[in-house]
Length: 318
Image 1 (cartoon, rainbow, N blue to C red):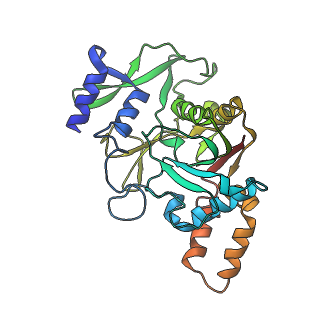
Image 2 (image 1 turned 45 degrees about the horizontal axis):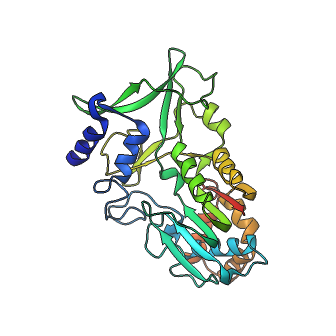
Image 3 (image 1 turned 90 degrees about the horizontal axis):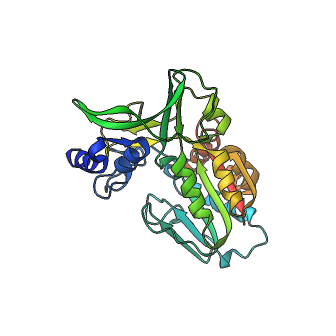
């Protein structure tokens, strides 16, 4: 952490404080000390991991994404498409152990140049919730932007004198806190602006703007370490994940601004039931006589009490 604090001091400069999104960018993506830059296990249930995602279910998640993408691109020659996974945790991505009809499959790690061209399926899983976000809070009837500074006992919250964005609601109550996923929207726009055509497919968790602006008075940002959730976002920078709900309205608009149509956000459960029904039926039939690992993984991905409702899927076609 000492070295990360030195990087913090260097970026904070004479003012001594950083805007919250810049702190999150350092904590997650500093080239040497950032949480997502360090070579260590993060995803799964093994020792030292911090959280699990749909990819923890094994190849079945990739198979279901393949089935859904094939359904959404029905009538297209998938052999002319490249499957591009952005922000993959593993070098092979979700199709590493899955036979697929695409002409090619490749992964783009976070921090790599986001070059996408030709006919593609651009896929991500929990990419957008891992982007830097700004924090705002109402005090004495007015919005204040929050940042981070180094105090006597370490990192601490600070109020900043900044130009406030237009999107802040004018009628939020005293103490209301808004975690604004601005960088997630910027990233979606960057990906959508690329010279490519095909299917945009993102699995993540988020809320509508109405929910973020009026229904989450404590904000949505959380820290995760060793499978425990915490509200202390300033503890152990570089050693814990920091995450924030995306704003689905903003991401949909980013796609539509770049010519995507048929855009929709569905719960993961509804998405797979709608677009991978034949695959689900096949697995259920094959495993009907026993409660196998594949059947358990399927239930984990679909059941509302597990990942089925926690995650949503954004998709659009251009």
